[in-house]
Image (cartoon, rainbow, N blue to C red; front, side, top):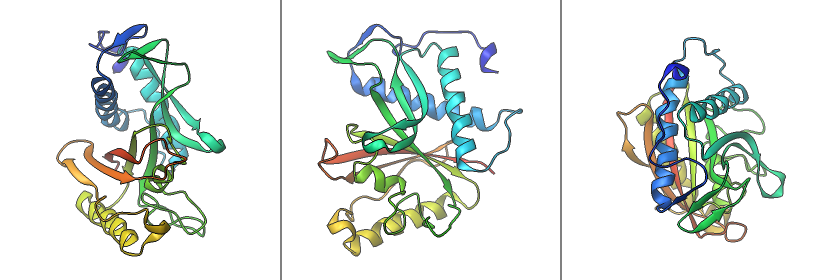
Length: 239
């Protein structure tokens, strides 16, 4: 159990410190999330919910508790974090205390990393696409990648994350399905050409738990503050 592990302060991540390398701090956050995903899934007392709201809530609480036990005290995890325009993202990684990254003071409530969580497969209904990981139905921008591209989530963040709960199907099949959908949107000129043929998900580690992928996407500027967003994908097999 995490609570029984000895507390040890990581090289970076404590509050009230000056962090010299923003990339190192970001990768520390991502590595922490990747380590804790299978720990959370395999907890013997974890209730076996399958719906996204319950999964997200319990995962967020686990992340926040684990970060305290591991002295990763520079961050906190908040569910349904407000985004510009009153939208909410599934999980926001926020700062806690005073952090300076490469001389920049990160104020309280600053979102360090926006995280969307999606089930694979999506439970389709009249308002939901069968590939909501990528995009929603016309008039409903509920797709994970779609929201980051349109600057609806994390418009001030050049990096984002999507966590997938794989509840059925195989990793390679889902990768093919998602990349095929991305390619189709590019071929169709959807959203006035915002979708590009050079935006597929690339495998970083497909034998890890979770699977790790990476993609880069053109985005709308404004409302986004950058022309592109880098998305790290962590796919966790739930079955």
